[in-house]
Image (tube, rainbow, N blue to C red; front, top):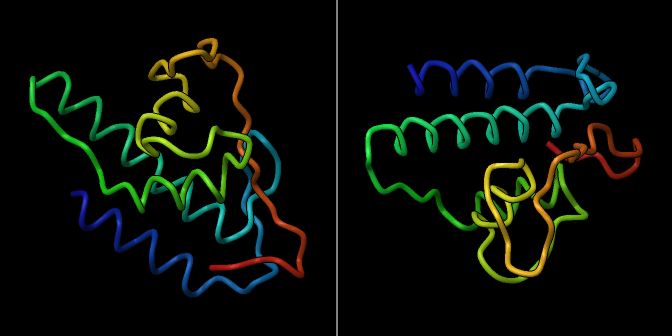
Length: 116
């Protein structure tokens, strides 16, 4: 199921024209935001499943850092990107920072900076 869902997300992002926008609760999302949101949602739900089954699981740091950089540029830099992503999405704590309860994703880049 994860492979099929991921393949669908990839196909949608690759075939969408650069000016395409999708609705999201934080406003219109460009293709790079849509890809990053799909990735973050997948990472969070796999995390939830692994925790529920008592399995250790940590995604690749580079993947987490890239998603953070695209959607959550105000998240703390340096340190463990997975811990920062968990914190930024309200699922984890970071030392010296209050629990995140009202994070907001940055959905659309200015047209001249869009990436896919």
